[in-house]
Every structure is written in C-alpha cells, then in structure tokens.
Length: 263
Image (cartoon, rainbow, N blue to C red; front, side, top):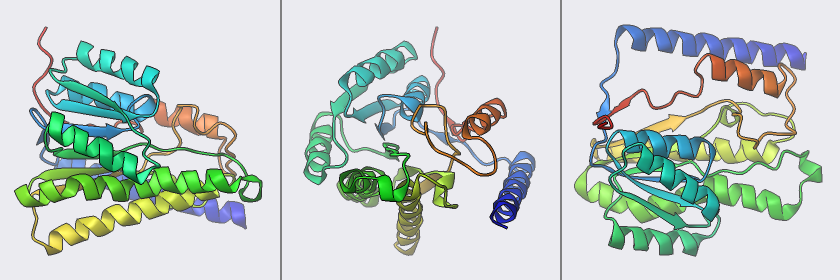
C-alpha cells in the first residue's frame, strides 16, 4: 500500500510538472536581467551554490558568497572570476548562528551595498533514522535549513521593501513536499522553508511590493555527496540522481539573463 501511494504521488507530480513545462514552452516567461544586481548566495562553497555563483558571474552580476568552508569559497571565487565576475566578494559565515548572520550581513552592506537578489541555498543533511539522530544535529538541520532564512530575510529584506526592488530565492527540495525515510529532519526543515518563502511572498503582495519577486526551487536529491546513505522506496537515490542530471532536472537558471562574458 505504501509503495502504491508513493508511486501515485510521483505520477501526479510528474504530470503536474510536465503540464507546467508545456505551458511555459508555449508561453515563455520574461527573463530577469541580473546584470549589475548584487546577488548573495549562502552555501556557495560547493554544489548548487557554486554553480549559481558561476552562472550569475557570467551574467554580469556582483556576487557575494557565504560559506563556512574557506577552501571551498576560494575555489568558487576563482571560478566566478574566470567566468567574468567583475566584482566577487566572499565571507565566512555560519548560517546556523543568528548573530553571525547579522554581523556578516552588516559587513556586506557596508563593503558591497544592498543585496538585491538573496539566494538561501545553504543546507545540511544527516541521513539517519530519526531515533538514531543526535539532538545537536537535529537542531543544526533546522537552524541551517530553515532558521537561517529568517535571519537573512531580516537582514536584507528591509532595503528591498524600501526600494520596492528585489528577488528572494529559496533553494528548497522535493523533500519539502513528501516525507522520505532517513531524512525526517531534513524534510521537516524543507517543508518549513517552502512555507516561509510562500508566506513572505504573500506578505509582499499584501503590501503591494510588486517589485519584490520570489522563486522557490524544489530539486530532487543532487549528486553533491549530501545524500549518501539516504534510502527511497520507489527508486534508488543514485539512479534518480543520474536520471535527473541527464534530463536537465538541475537547470534552475533558465529564467535569468544578463551580459555574456566577453572573450
């Protein structure tokens, strides 16, 4: 019965996103020009964060990179510059700590300017059964995957509201829609992140701040090593990652444009 329900959920999601893709194929949305925008990406030292930094750099944006890994940040900075970044700034920031987020945010505002595109991408995964997960790691998951969004919004949203200009990007997960074995805490954190992003979007609409947009990205598990040990009943995780990579499931930058890198 459980297998049947999971299969049904997957089929419904596939049909929904297929229909959505067909609609956008016929009526393509307008691309957002990010040239000259200040883009802050958390968790930029590897994975999706690094790929986003490279892409935004190639589109002419000023990129601000946060991570707790200095070596990873240095690598991302180098790659961003190789891809045309005119201005790239990196900061060590532990997004699980409220005061660290506020401190580094103030530093960014003084040294770079007001962030106009905020991408909450930092995330962690334990990959254990709930009862086997230490309390400290459960708390860390919620702090990084959910609470950090609260603090970055508090830090950077006021300037966006004042200017009625900005873009809030939440890198959530399909785990924010469906429960998955061995990542119950991760699922809970992504359910919360998704709901928070949608709620703030509604608040901006209620305030008639139409210049502030929200994008919520919900990829499946991605081949960055974060999901080693995670189990799924319908399809082996590694197989799903390979399939989604092949069919372009990780492409999340198709709605942005800017100036191309000059050779």
